[in-house]
Amino acid sequence: MPGSRIVSDVVCPFCGCLCDDLVIHMKDGVIAQNEQGCAISKSKFLNHLKDRIESPQIRTGESLTDVDLETAISHSVDLLSKAKRPLVYGLSSVENDAHREAYKISEILGAVVDNTSSVCHGPTILGTQVSGEAAGSLSEVKNRADLVIYWGSNPQFAHPRHTSRFIRTPGEFIKDYRKDRRIWVFDIRKSITANIADKFIKIEPGRDLEVLSSLRAVVRGHEIDVSDVAGIPIQKIKELADTMKKAKYGILFFGLGLTQSHGRHHNVDAAIRLVQDLNSYTKWNMMSMRGHYNVAGANKTLTWTTGYPFAVDFSRGYPRYQPGEYTAVDLLARGEVDVLLNIGADPAAHFPKDAVEYMRKIPVINIDPKRNLTSLLAEVNIPSAIAGIECDGAAVRMDGLPLYLKKMIAPPEGVLPDRDILKMIFNGLLEVLP
Ligand code: SF4
Image (cartoon, rainbow, N blue to C red; front, side, top):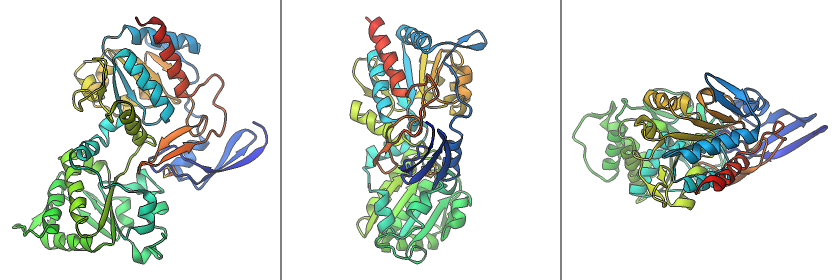
């Protein structure tokens, strides 16, 4: 589109913060400037045309051959319709309408559908299912929180504007954030977030559960008969618990350092119970630091549709939920699926070796805007538009707030949004399935 224009209130589709205050400058039909965005956001917006899958591709022997979209769709339909146990995976970096089409495909095929939360905040969901959830919004945190804890998360690196937008900024009841709001970091090493915190509490690796349980015990008035827990002197644990009880509004943000370390969902369960105990004295809230921009959306849309947030199996004609059984890594590592439809994720880069080795033995249909490790081993690659830049859609922020992603610019010629590609596959399956 020729000419220049400035679009404000643009939502950034690159991490779970979904910052909704970007100002994007367009010049001569290209994105020229991203105001407000962090380094990740600027790089993603300004380089959205780099490393693209330039054409639909089908594997012939060792190499990938460019084909037209209809041929790639028809080959995908053929592979999926002949599969006995297909797996649909990804969905955390695509918008909500694409989820709907993926679930329709999963249901009609009797497939397993899983999203990337099974390798990040799956334990958070399991902990929540056991112990409930003390939920609140990021705005509430900004306006009220006087004690902020980051536990096993490093937002200065992974969510660069989380702290500056919601914590190190004034709020309705926090006039001077330097004086009225304290930041604590619990981690196994001094991260860059710990460097900006008021207090850093170092935990011995794999012992978060003990620290959380000790804090709970102290909050509930019990004595602990040891001199230290996970490297933290017991006197310090008492002081921490006392300050937590005296906070007017506390928030516990937690990341993969808690969910994917020793204890996993038991860690989250203990954190939830600590927050519940603290709510007997004051107001506390907790929130998972979601990484992919719409992984929270993938959990929500799958729950709206099937009743379950991830690891859902349609093979009996109705949804069944079993993490560990129907989670993508486990299915691939055990060699139980015969086709993978991968949408907006890069499992070849992130899954364990045995799962990736099995991916090399089965056809992988890969829908993604960019080249990545999964696209290198795929049987079919179908390029898609980037939601929030090249097509619109909806996504869900880490606190559960749905936000609208704007279309800034047309996608490369012939490239469609994920939802339209998935619709074509679904319609193709309707024609061939009995
Ligand atoms: S913090 Fe996340 S959502 Fe906000 S601008 Fe950076 S990448 Fe985008």
